[in-house]
Image (cartoon, rainbow, N blue to C red; front, side, top):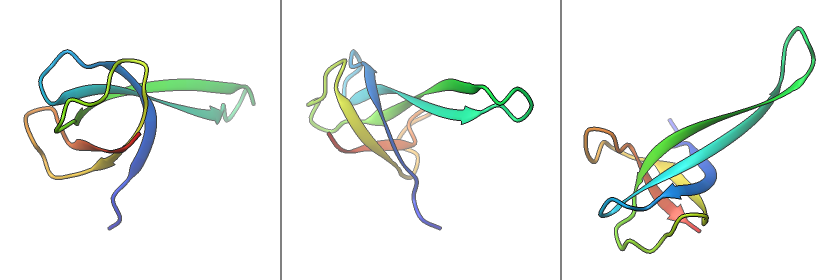
Length: 76
């Protein structure tokens, strides 16, 4: 099964080798036909601590790195 790749914005870089990425998705409500924005936060592994809050990054699924980390940074 292919690994998922998501694009989002870094919201936090306070932890060592970890960033929090907010990923927004847009979809049309099935009944109201109104465009809805939903966001979800993912914790991703950043080996070199190179990304700061506000950066746009792409993350890819990986094997669990810790209790909460299942993603790693692919590129900026």
